[in-house]
Structure formats: C-alpha cells, structure tokens
Length: 334
Image (cartoon, rainbow, N blue to C red; front, side, top):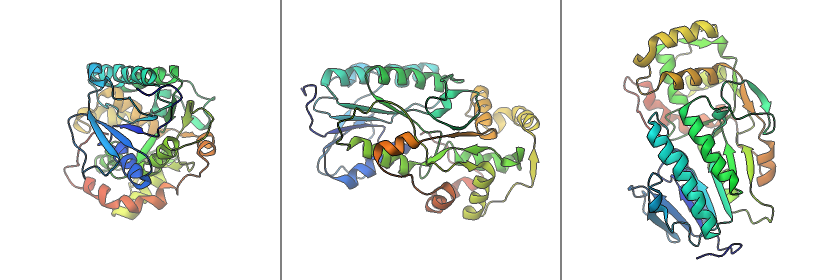
C-alpha cells in the first residue's frame, strides 16, 4: 500500500466512459507519461487501453467494491456523477459513493483528489462575474443537493472541487441539445436572450483536469475553483452560433420571463418527458438570468489560459449537435 507522501504518479479516473470522462481519458492518453487506472462500472473502454493503463471494475453505488482501488494511486480525478431523478441512486452514487471513495483515498495516502461538481448548486441566485467567495451553496434540486454533499466529503479530506456551469462538446446531451429542443417546440427567446452564461468545452475542462493531475508543484491542491472558459456568452449569441453552424432557424419572437415560464410550465412533460418539474424550473432560471463566474483563480493555478469562446469552438462539434435537429433527438446521460 502507498504510504502518505509517497509519489508514483498514477492517476485514478472515474467516469471514463461518460461525457467529460471520455475527454479526460483522451487527454491522459496523449500525455503518455504516467500510469492511469480507470474505475469502470461493467463497461469496457473503447478503444482498448494503451500501455500504462489498467482498469478495475467497481460500483460507486456499492462501496464494498471500492476496496483497494486507490492503492498505489497518487491522484484521483472523480468525474463520475449520476444525473437523474431517482433519489435512492442520487444518494447511493453521488453521496455515499463519493464518501466511500474519499475514505479509500485517505486510507491509501492519495495526494490529490479532484472532484467535478457544478455551479448549479448555488440555487436561485443571479451572479455576474462572481468569484468563489461571492457565492453561497444553496442547492435547489435533488441532483444539486447530492453533489453538494459529495463536495463536503471531498473538501473534508483536503481535496479540490471544480464548479463549471454549462459544459458543451461531443457527448453533450444536457446543455445545447436542450436549447435546440426548446427552440424546435417553442420558437422564442426569453427576455431577448440577453442572459449571459458561463460555459466551457468538455475538451478544455479535460485539459484542466489533466493539468491538475500532472501538477508537480508543492502547493496543496485543495478548495473550490470555478471552472469556466472566461468568455461569458449570451443565450442570443449561443442561438446565433447554433444557427450559423447547423443551419437551424433563429427564433422570431421574444417573451418576458414570467410569460415564458408559464408557457413552459403548461407544456410540462410533453416537452421534456425525462425531467422533473423541479429540474425544469431550475434549468429555465439558469438560462434566463445572468449566471457567469470569475475563473481567474483556476487559470492562475494551472498556469494556462482558457480556450476560445463558444462561438469559435462550436464548429468543431457541429457533427455531434446536428443529430439533435431531427424529430427524434438522442437522449443520454452525462
């Protein structure tokens, strides 16, 4: 077993088959300078793992299966998250699974534990260029509450928490596809689409995680960091970028927030059959009001700058998002 303070460079990645995890795995492949272990839940990686990579089969929802997975590990990148409305699974995977993994990390003497959370756990609050000390955790949905409790376990053990807001890129099914679907059913912007949002591409977020995993500095990696690209983008510009890349139509109408909220509430499950009313209410709030965050602390910490803004990066992912223009959008899970 690894002793506290012992460094071997091995990275343990959870969620490697998910939206963000796939991008992180690709980034670690390109580094090819340290051993990597994947924590997999029944699924196998594709393509096969290169030299220096190994996989363990374990289930965050079954803490007993995590025994020993952190042995000889230097850094944990905890990306796996259950996103859904099953409260039992939220508690099992996001809360108890993270608590168990953090406990295993302490036992094995893991030096770094990095957890990808979300800025959505600030609840119903409007933020404009807020830094990490300007905000208060006040989760409004069961998903956010479970992730807030997961954060507590990580921070209590001296770990680091990243809080992106909206993430886009290949594999995204929860951000831009939802906007595309909304505009197909409801051809209007809310408040003219003036709300400005913090975003980051999955590839840029993965680069951050790889940089943190390979950081050789002596300063501890701990605390909370906003993780966004530093280029707040309005909903109107997002919609314009989608139209330019995908040939989708720009909405001809704009409705005030309170009217749009009523229209979407009345549509209910017919528009979003897989989302709870509470989740829909919070999503609507997030894309209707300003929510953008200062991520200077993170970029200074890793000694790099963010990538280009969404309008410049979106053409890279046009092939992925084009599938959502059809009558049967792909449903998925991050």
